[in-house]
Image 1 (cartoon, one colour):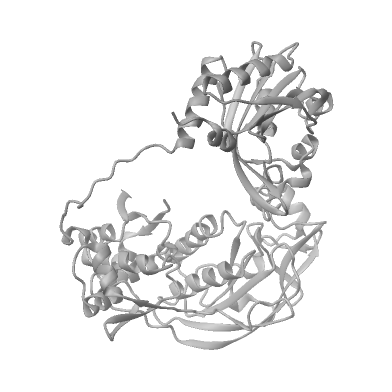
Image 2 (cartoon, helix red, strand yellow; image 1 turned 180 degrees about the horizontal axis):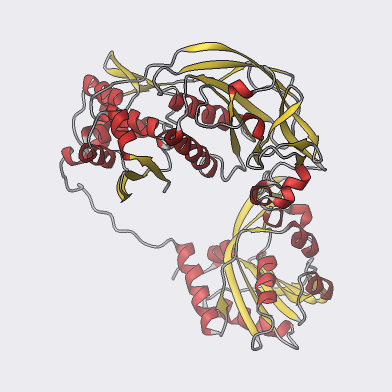
Length: 548
């Protein structure tokens, strides 16, 4: 849960409310407040409310639920004298920009602005992998023309925090912590995205801004850029930022014109409102209390929507900063929050339904218990794995890759459990032998060009003389105990030695494979001892297991 630090006097000034009232109203908004030190509040905000990651957003929500303000009034919008030229940047193709005039940055607000940026990076931005945000002092832009383009990684700039010293971006990546953390997100083939103004680099998104446009106390107007891999997310993030900063007294929003064949929009921010029609009867059914169209509209306005009762329903305009509103249920929840859950009353449910485990789950658990009884240890690994290991295992042709991975070593979904099983054995190969492990979990692979996921079970034995029989015996034992009739035949498998591999079939359907791992595969995985392994489909097994 994101925790927002805000000065107590600042929040009281923004809302006009005392600390006691603030704590009560924020609790109704699913937030918790602590005071770790004198004059400082820590507000734990629900992650689905990024509009509340800054004091202005918190105040807007609080004043609504307190009945001090209703609905949302769009900010004053003017044309900004800034042109953004966009070239093709394949690894981060989308960019939006805006100007907010009259922000008037002071020391306290600067702390929150930086915090706002980082909280959005961590949540909506998935640690900058999806979106990245840049704040710039508009008055310090070298030119009113800003360019977004791909340049060599040796391009020189003045990174923020280095006192105006110039260095190549490649040098920065080697010496700076942020460079180490985020340098691999957008770099490709010795090139990287840059923002330029007047021929000077003002940012290298998603990593660092330039000292040239540093925001500091005294900055009055902000130029904001948001870059990312999703057009929808870039636009929504920019809307959240702009509408929050526009809550500052006297602030105005400047529209930035975009130019170029790679632009997603003609100008930004979009400040787009979603239109919804809400039936109060559905809300009444969900909440268990009667809600009239007039009541529903009032409570939605207190949650800062623009809502009007009309013909028995409510016409709702969801403000741009409410990224969490996806449908009717979300609007009903807002009404419940405004009413107050304690005011909805208590009622026992009319029916009680007993739950039970799915048949497939019962089979999975039985197999796991049997393997533990046979001396195997259960392990759990990540579904993501290394493309190098997938290639070494011979499964590259059916592997599903992640489009924008955080780390290259975890950029492919495992098409077989044997890959992560061998990784586990490698990490434990110098323990007392034999090492006997198993894993049950998801695999994802391409079938007829489409990704398919399947629950499987893999087991392996590592020993100085591990052989086919070391795995064959426990697999046969498990199948016979749970009552599955099966047959075995010779087989070829990418990871198993020829002549030392077998396929298991049940009712003519392939259940799985048993074999001894090839020496070249052992070497690729860093294994110094022989390994025998097996992998079966738990889904196929459940279909053919007797329910009696």
